[in-house]
Amino acid sequence: MAQAVRREAGRPALLQAVTDAMRIPDLRGRLLFTLGILVVFRVVAHIPIPGVNQEALANLFRDNQLLGMLDIFSGGAMRQLSVAAMGVYPYITASIVLQLLVPVVPSLKALSKEGDYGRQRLNQITHWATVPIAAVQAYAQLLVLQRAGVLGDGSLLGGGFTATLAVVVSMTAGTMFLVWLGELITERGVGNGVSVIIFAGIVAGLPQMVGQGFVERQNFTGIILLVVLALAIVALIVLFTEAQRRVPVQYGRTVFRGGVIRRAAGTSYIPLRVNSAGMIPLIFAFSVLILPATVAQYFNTGGGSLGAGLAATVVRLFDSTHVVYWVALFLLVVVFTFFYTMVVYSQMNLSENLQKSGGFIPGIRPGKPTQDYLTRIIIRITVAGALFLGLVAVTPYLASTLTDIRALQLSSTALLIVVGVALDTMRQLEAQLLMRHYEGFIR
Image (tube, rainbow, N blue to C red; front, side, top):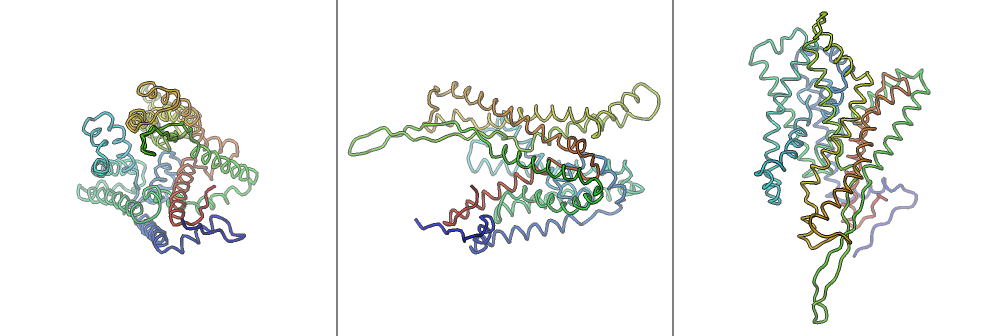
């Protein structure tokens, strides 16, 4: 085996790893291809649809927490209402829905067990489902923005079926184009393409965040406290993203040694992640919380009737500035974390696959006892993961309360995405370097 290329004296590991990567033609091509695709993405994100009141749009995003979260997935394109305003969010929605349907629909469950062919078919179904979801979401967004006065005199949706259809098709095509760019990155670049596109959109918004920080420059203590809190959240995200419970597993196998058949044992482990749900519970919780206020707005006529008064109360309680909103968000994130984690692990069939491969957990009988044992472990570690995600969800409220800074928002969801994508990309780059006998940088 070739000796690993050693790190040059005094040079940081990550910088040396990037230098080594740029020296390898294949890996250099992948990195440059990824950067080129991201440039195309940023160009598309600045192509606006016509007839938009940008000042009203900025005010709407400043007052609406959910739109701010959706803007993360669009890479800032929604804030400008470009043709890529929905980003890859419809694709993520379709993926989540399909994941939840696989254990319920027999035909989908059968496809999931057909190896590579089944995965390709499920991926194709996800793409088909993305198109109607994107079209419906595009039309719904236009209706909401028109009601908020963002679309000027409303001529966009009032200009006839053809004008409306053209805008909806353009926004749907923008979403599918971004999904295609993401798949190109996955195939020919570095990292998970869809995640990298979301990551690039968040990073592109950093200069704007820095500019907003100057608005609060008189509250110097608050800014310092906000920076310290952000660093603490990043450290927690790294800790919980990498944390896992390793369940020991032994494998019995038959070997032929010295003309005699003998039994030999191998030892491995099952890595059960503390936060296996990722950011999915946050998406679920934000989507559910926006529903009561949205429905109540249609009944909030401003009159003195009982129904209008109740609707006004619901709108007030589920506003992102009210403490009830954040308490409900915390509870929903915890519930959805348990729900999604159990759905994912039930699809993995750990005990069944373990038994088929001839493995067993020491001291635990195969079959149902193994399944029950793993379920108990998953539930225990998910408690920590659910509380962590709940804390991440309410971090913006805690940050604004502790620092008294309103102009500069700490988006914990954005931090979770950025850190997760960065760690995943670093692991892939590390694997590429080690495969070529270069020294890695992850310790």
